[in-house]
Image (cartoon, rainbow, N blue to C red; front, side, top):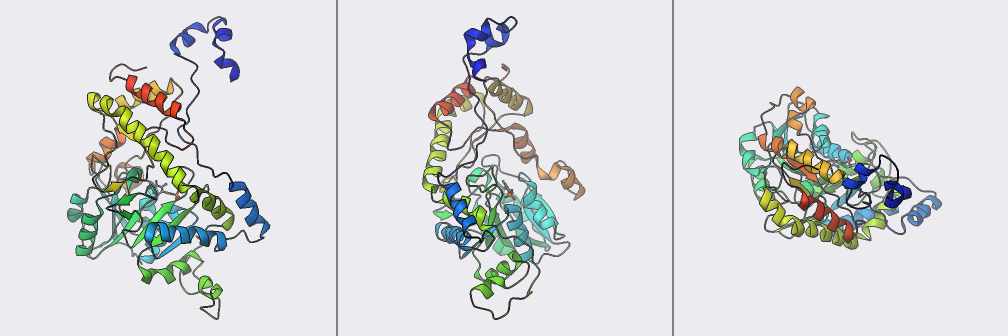
Length: 407
Ligand SMILES: *Cc1c(COP(=O)(O)O)cnc(C)c1O
């Protein structure tokens, strides 16, 4: 690799000229994503291993849960093996029955739907708003039926959904709100933390997220009536948590459940990162703001949409995306950046038009905004390790791109 950067050496090689002539300078590749690390993560893991109690429901997980409860402002946080599993727990807690309906945005990850489909419920796909890429709350009343049991808003990119309106519509229909806050940890809505706005919320600590232990998640509970059952469901349907606390005299099978607890050995990685949360979020915000400021004029000139943050919302700075006028333009910008070593990413194929969505009865033209956004959306690198020079280079290269002049 080092040799390739030595342009004098390489330009002497026959046949190498055209490729090098196109290259403006020795471009160090910029990765799309690098998962965050805390300086003492390995030491924390070693401590848990040395304790000979690396399993779930231990003291390190409890420390993470306590931190989430106080920072997010919820009654109970339960670490889980993934956000997918936290959503599955939510579906079990709702006692869904076959034929029940759950409304969720089409522009999301499969897990938002799968957790409920596994219980026999039918996902009803809601289109999104073109500005925030979040579920379009004004379409909810038309989608509610007497079978609707829950609305599952996803705070896309870490920007809040219009929760006051969603909560009002849900309350009027007597249905639960379950936040998919996989992108939303430490984002806010009118001064309240994302994840504290529904009866339940799911967080993700997958390697692609702001904080990660590889695979992990959490179920946040704002309704105290759900806490005891949630503990049992996470713990193979047993009352183990109560038994350990001395609140039950027998350790026994009480409910349906599965094995959803996160091992303490992984919680150690998470706790080390949580302790760096201000530094992590501050750096992500700096990069996000540098993109927003640096690309504003370019975006206006070429009709490209930048992320929109409604009044009263504090982003979690999970993603920075641009939305172009179609897949052709998106590919052109993506290739233009790739030629300079800058990796970027698309995002979700809308669920309503996916093969599984189709099998579940959705029509291909159900959610036209989700379709358009999905085809034009490109995500830029956003992680704390990006240096200012990297961010400046991304802004400079994006700004140099013009529609119809690829490369
Ligand atoms: C990442 C993600 C999930 C799934 O998270 P896992 O922890 O990998 O199960 C669910 N919903 C959304 C919106 C996500 O981005």
